[in-house]
Amino acid sequence: MDTNEILLSDSILWTDPVLWEELELQAAEGTIDLFPLPPYSYIYFSKLSLLFKAKHEGAITEAETEEAKVSFLREFQQLIEKEQKQEEDIRLQKEKLGQKITEANEANERAKAVYVEYQNAIRTAGTLTSDIEKSNSVYEIMDIACKIIGLLTGDTSFHGRQLKKFSLECNEQDGSGE
Image 1: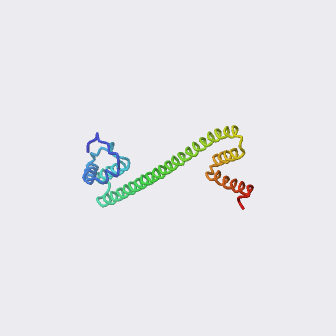
Image 2: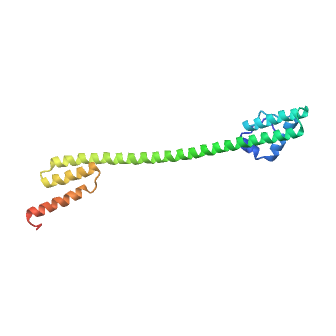
């Protein structure tokens, strides 16, 4: 393994059997460079290196070496699985957060649109108020006032409903509504 190359992921290392076998052989020979290894691989191969050193010195048997190697490998696999689960959890959290941000942005855009609409209604009401001041007709004043009320309340049908009531009232007073 090139010591200038730093491996970034234990998962990538784990899925490369040729590199993995080469590193195990280097650990057995005591020539492994642990520096470029990612964290969990560093732990595994440093333990493995010490294990093979103890075996070569006669401190442990071949069977004990194999048993410990299997135990170290199982521990490494569990760490990798835990890390992958954490990465998946983080990915899901980022996805949910992204959705919430999108929803918040959409709600903000809707609120801005409502605000703009309301500001336009206020401007229009101001113009219509000056029309009321200029008018001499009670009917025209009532018509404009109903438009203003509808604009400011956001009730688009208010003006029409009031005009119907007003025309019915006028018809009844004229006697033509009977």
